[in-house]
Image (cartoon, rainbow, N blue to C red):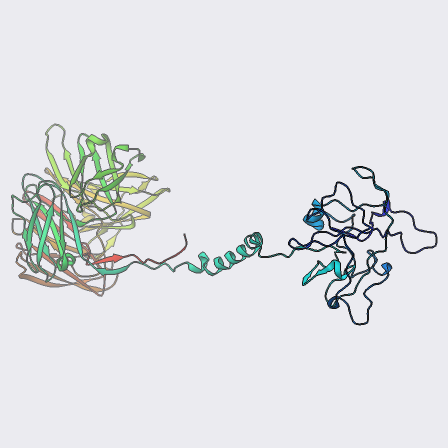
Length: 628
């Protein structure tokens, strides 16, 4: 920065004359500094220049000072004036930008940082000595237009149309153009902030909505493997549609399904291992299937593929073992994970984690080989990739006699506080209740007896306490064989928290399972083995309001055999005998939801198969754009 005359800090100034009120001021001329662009201001001829000073534009030019231009002077004001009118300490219009006491790198600017300060009287030059030059008169201050800063002279403030920096005292500042740094540092964050406010996560969050229903284009049911020497696989239509169903397994086959009827796969086409039954088009929404065995007597519903299900009461020991069957109905691979609950808590079994099943194939896991151990356990089966149908075949063997009993163990969809188990086979035998607590807190459970007349808790019922993440076996043989349980068609297990349950009935080399019944709100259909000597009894209960159920029995061709209206009430059960030729039973709830099961009792054994809601529609997720 340039200054008029010689300006020093107060501690370096010469003392003023006695009685003088104005401080000493040097009128030595200062060479003009670089102006905008390549243009420079002429230096005064009597200026003294430091030998080491390098002018901004090269060799300093000399000349005579210019006078103010008409644009810089008010009318009636002389172009020259006395130096005293431009006091740097008192003048507002001629005050320099900064004094040596306050000027810093930010105030001085780039020119002053690179250009040497003007010579002052008494200063010693770094270069060769030079004769002192008498101080000349200072440049006059010329008033400028209103709102425009004043300088010592118009010539030092203006050159052509270019104006100097206000109050620079003879210094001209370069004109600033568009500064990218300023834009990036100031304007860009402001713009980005405004954009973020407009598209903030709060503003763009989409209200969560459940998946909406779509027509079911393809259905896949999982059927377990063979039980005993001969097993039948029946496929039917619960409505008017007919078509072709495909069986995927060790023996792929196709079955022509009649409208409102059922068809059995040929013996040569019936796979002895697990299989998947699939259908597309209109038949998909009405596809039903079951697997049955004559000796031992057994029936199991082929359930839709599921992402998670619980199998309560499996074994992996020498006298009680289970086989887990996985079937993949699709062409892509699928993976399942199993969590094992034991009598002492969670079990660490790495061999049943990450079970991969290739497309259109099956895998069997013998728990007695994969994780041999005694005691009763519960499996949580979860599909982490693709789709899988998972079923379990359970087997017991009596030591000494070698008597073997087998049956399919149905799955429970999820733990619940109220577990209604409908269907108690007649004939006595050993009855054991398995209760699983998957939670972190201890659970207490109470047993109630369900009859056609009432639901009550007998005094003889044992108290059940289940530790966290554990399995407990409870013997109910004495309770269910007692007079207090006469007429019982089921039991209700109420827990203080969510639990899973299953009831095992074993007698005379026969094994049967009863699992919690599922609530049904719309018409459902169950396939049964046609003919034979086994009696078929339908047990209904679990009504949430007073209502009724319309029950229709049909043969394999879809012809109606019988139709009954059964009244239902909360906390009560109802039973209905079905014709022997019944191959399909249709249950329509009205004004209430219900639960139910069919109990089959024959010379070769007993079996219980439950009703379930049919999957008639698909689900499409609600998708919306949003910020991560």
